[in-house]
Length: 108
Image (cartoon, rainbow, N blue to C red):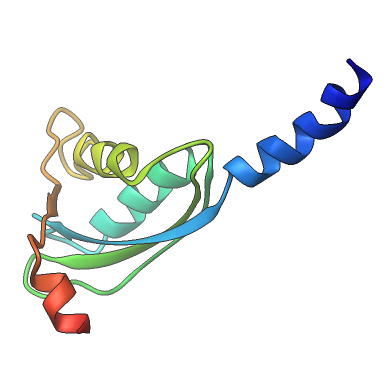
């Protein structure tokens, strides 16, 4: 049993990895939208860092550094889309733009 206890922490550490997600968010209408989303994300466990670009049209690009043992990109996207708007706390206006393969072609 002692051998299992010695190896258990190493197994857990290998299950965790740090990843970076680059997510385009739409329906942004003012400069307060990005900090609102950033604050919401940083309040979630497993997210270490959030940066964002300025608004281009109604879109901004968020770069999120997170731990896979605690959260996933799908959970991060859900957190973005359920963030209340900065002007109307009863609305959830932000949407994640899915790339559907165009992203892969751009990097090939």
